[in-house]
Image (cartoon, rainbow over all chains, first blue to last red; front, side):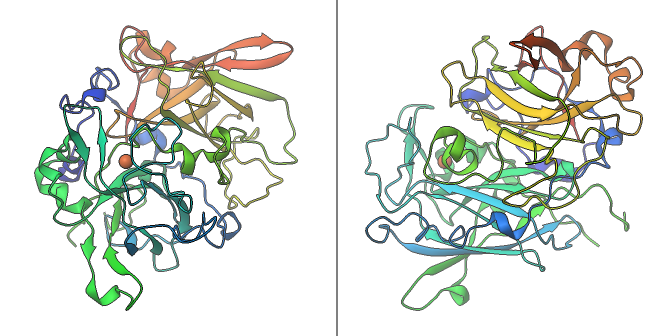
Amino acid sequence: MEDKDFDVHPPHLYPAYKSTILRSPTKPLMLVKEFLEDVSLPVFGESVIGKLDNDLTKNARKNGQPIGERIKVSGIVTDEYRRPMPNTLIEIWQANAAGRYIHKEEIHDAPLDPNFLGGGRMLTDRAGRYTFYTVKPGAYPWGNHFNAWRPNHIHFSVMGHQFEQRLVTQMYFPGDPLFDFDPIFQSVPKHARELLIAKFKMEWTEPEFALAYEFNIVLNGKSKTPFE
Amino acid sequence: MEKLRQTPSQTVGPFFAYSLTAEQYGYDYNSIVKGSLLGDKTKGEQISITGSIYDGNGDAISDAMIELWQADELGKYRIAPIQSRNNDFLGFGRLGTGAKPDHGFRFTTVKPGLVNGQAPHINVILFMRGSLRHLYSRLYFSDENNAKDPLLLSMDATRRQTLISQRMEVNKNIEYQFNIHMQGKKETVFFNL
Ligand SMILES: [Fe+3]
């Protein structure tokens, strides 16, 4: 049942990422495709998206602009058969340029930015495309092992159309020297890691304003596929 | 046509709350999905779904996020888009487990009807730090007739109980307790889709 696409995902248990040890199921997952293939996921209307929700450089300003390298991130959400997925909810969250999350329990000794929240959301357009502006997140230390640092990343939550299309992932930046040392990134099978790395897009940069990255997202598309 | 490779899953991590469950945690950002699955004019008897998520040591997990998705009283899933204000039943909810000291969750909803001959149930999606891929499960109700549910029948009988929430009456509020165990004797059944 597990075809080659299944292999792009990390295993549930990956001991180098220590938190998986007590939090991953020990029994095999039950195959239930037949009972859930007709279940969709909720759809969202434009009214849930605020004007500045896709601009993290603006959506939490208090007295100025957030500090950091301004970037634009854009891409297309499709299913495995290259069909664009319009009206798909994407939610994002990230650390600020100094590598600090606004989360209350975060204790990393790096400055908070009074003008940066790090959260946003958007719906894909009719062509399945999304775009948002932010500042490039910094690397941050975490307690997994001695001197553990996460590569720069932006967290993504994607609400596909079908139940099996739910996805939570992280987008990384090209050439990050921390890739080799990060068990969360390394948990993905080697051949699939490139799928998590955004591409620098010179042609999408905005002169005097922002650098640009492309991050396309492909959702599990096993059901409701007429061509299968 | 050659299929595209899916985007690999990664953990939700510990710091999702200010974006995904901001209002519940008191962050300065609005939430579009909350712990109530009701619309402003949803009729029917309200129930609560409560519980905690336990790791392999039996400790309640404080940085998990749980989503519920269910049909309405008549067994119909919402098709209309969820808007910023909604009169009709949403059927979709989301909570983190880090907002209260006991690391529990409490959803408000109505009991779903039968869906295509399946016993009333709620779909569950679970995310947490330490989970590289989200997990799917399902919640059934202890006071419903679950004996003929095809999904429950298709699984190991000794594990069915892990999907059945227990009805309780607390201060005249009807509450269904659904604890999720990641490991151990009571390990919850999770699905592969
Ligand atoms: Fe992170």
